[in-house]
Amino acid sequence: MPERTALYPGSFDPPTFGHLDLIQRATKMFTRVIVGVATNNEKDCLFTVDERVKLLQALTAEFPGVEVTSFTGLTAEFARERKAVAIVRGLRAISDFEFEHSMAITNKKLNPSVDTVCLMPSEPFLFISSRVVKEIARYGGDVSQFVPPLIAERLREKFHRQAEARG
Image 1 (tube, rainbow, N blue to C red):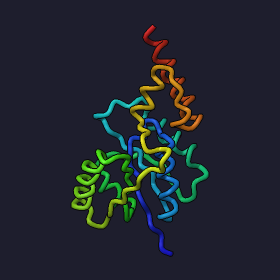
Image 2 (tube, one colour):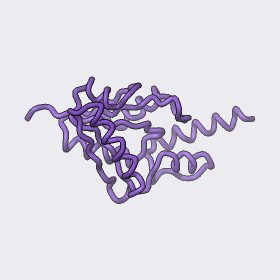
Image 3 (cartoon, rainbow, N blue to C red):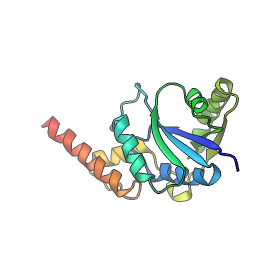
């Protein structure tokens, strides 16, 4: 079977069980999955790009055919550079559809050789979002049902350091 590469782009701030579910499922559909941690200067991220790449590398080390890297610029162009035939996106709810549909059309115009493949998260992960996870962690809540232990620990460390810095 010829190599079929997919790109799963995102901010992954922080990576959640939902992200890992989609990565693992994408490995069953494609021979290679590139997890592209996007550098987005408009987003105020808790973790640096390098931290997110390292966290995802640790979390996906046992997943076959997965590469984690960062990228800047247009997703469609990065997909072209990496010879991806598909861009994997997650659809948690109907509210995600309009945005993802628009992005899929735009990416297809920018790179006609790439298709967008939307996956619904497995049922336990349907309502997980990085934004909500950070909010729960910020106030000391238990995030263990949303993120792996490594991420829960890093969130505790980040928010503890922020609290100490505020004095």
